[in-house]
Length: 250
Image (tube, rainbow, N blue to C red; front, side, top):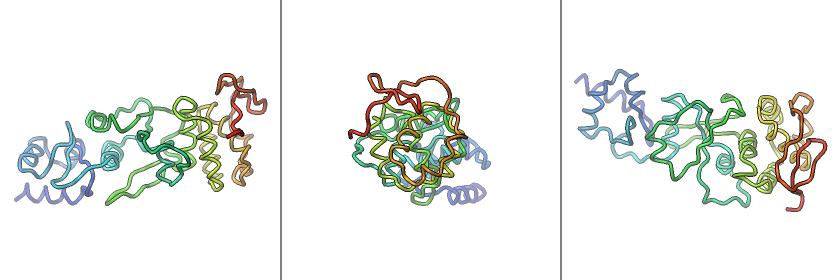
């Protein structure tokens, strides 16, 4: 009876469509032997070593990320161009791309996650932005996960430019965003550690000249020193000291 009571309480805490980890179950007072018993009796199905899901549940990427974020307290989240797509911003962007998952350097995704989604995701580890700025809740089924806001996603996308994303793509997406939050952008830019990202963002933003750009205080943003080459063979923009192609000819 005690085991059934414990199990019912645990099952009620696990949202439908989400992964539950052995780490979290142990913290709830469920021993490894009891987890094995629940699995043997088909209350839990294995999702990989140290990860499970409820009987008759189906798991998608967000359900796995929910466990990574809330049960393992890791910073990994959908960001960059993938987050922009969730926000409905995907002008001329291919839908066949992998989902970009961003997280802090030094953190490790569990083996079960990497094995399940190795063909569907691209993991980007970086410390260019703090983990507590520019994230918002994305509701999915009975739970929510943290994803990048449009503002943070743009900077994450530029971080991968031009190796993963072209400058043309960045320009086209920013062109379709006449409304952004200048206060959040200011906070992100002041706390961004990548000189390249900040310079490229401001270069494109100035060209678009939307109202939100005029509200930014560039004097408070550290743009570093020295020249940065974004594209070989490009022209030097003296204001931002970057060598870059002519994106106006898109």
